[in-house]
Amino acid sequence: MGDDVPLGALMGLLVTLLVLSAFFSGSETALMSLNRYQLRHKAREGHRGAVLAERLLKRPDRLIGLILLGNNLVNFSAASLVAIIALKMGGQPAVALGTLILTLVVLIFSEAAPKTLAALYPERLAFPAALIYYPLLKITYPIVWLTNVASNGVLRLFGVRGSDARSHSLSQEELRTIVHEAGSRISNRYRRMLISILDLEKVTVDDVMVPHNEIIGIDLDDDISDIERIVEESEHTRLPVYRDNIDQVVGILHMRRLATLAQRSFDQDALIELLDEPYFVPEGTPLSTQLVQFQRRRKRIALVVDEYGDIQGIVTLEDILEEIVGEFTTDPGDNDDDVVKDGANTWLVDGTANIRELNRSQDWALPTDGPKTVNGLILEMLETIPKPRTCLKINGYPFEIIESDDTRIRTVRVGLRIDESTPNDA
Image (cartoon, rainbow, N blue to C red; front, side, top):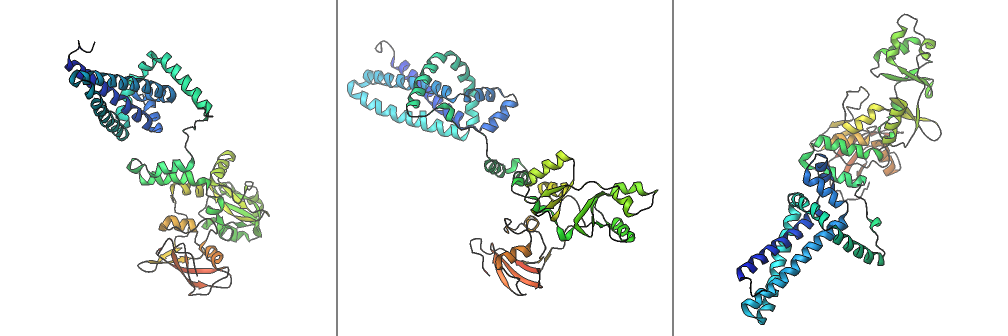
């Protein structure tokens, strides 16, 4: 039969087979290299190639069976054709040379080059290929099905089952990596917001609450004139009301309700009638959980208590939202003067400054898995209250104690980070 076919026709058929081999090899790599989430997005937008590619990839065993069926059929046919061409051109000795040349051609032009191209531009090759593979799979389904049954049977002999395949769901850390690598597709502001949302599980109410000693509230044991002054000067919308100290909280006052006292006498009893029941949450509650609880209970403020029931601070809905979007209000309770520029590369920091807020505002990397304030961080490191001019290094940042007393550190000087790998020392 080969003697009746012109040599030019055989060469043309061989080139066609090599092109088909390149198509099968490249399209396989392209389809398997597709980003599953970009593919799903394009499929939802109605992209025809993406829709078909997603359907094909739901059963990768069938897709691979189809591609291998076509690729092997083409390659074996090309090998037979090369043998015929070699016999026509040079007889038996030329067959071995033709096999060697075909191997090099297939390796370069039908395997390496198309697969490299497909890995670089998977969507450009995968979507058009899906338009061909989808109907082709329908036509060859019986053969592909038999092939899959046989191959899956072999895999079962080695204890491998299709149900063991991992899902394509992302872990929290993987999702964080994707957000970081989004590049210019997501603005820096939105990227920070997304990362903050993912980090809500790691942040607790202790990290963002107003501590016990900074709580502004109304003491019912005070004179009515003192209570009126606190109400007039306060710029908070809600204030805790207590007797003697914050641990004896009575309720939460919403300032708008004071308007109902316009026609009545302002006294402690009238004030108590306006109070909402206090809402308590345990310390260590993740912000993600507390955000849901605020929404479920329709609350905006909660008192944080320890295991003994003592109040440790106050957390508000605004505190959690600011953890996500950053500072969006000017709160008179904010520590705007906690950090003061002291030199080219040094800052004076108040001992009560919150470490998380310092890291966010100054772009520092002080440890946040322990104490919440600079004072607590240094005391934990030294295990004593240091004298002024004591120097130490924490996470690569040089600290110098500027002012302290018998109970706490009041002011420290912090310099630029020196060496991230240098151990903490005093």
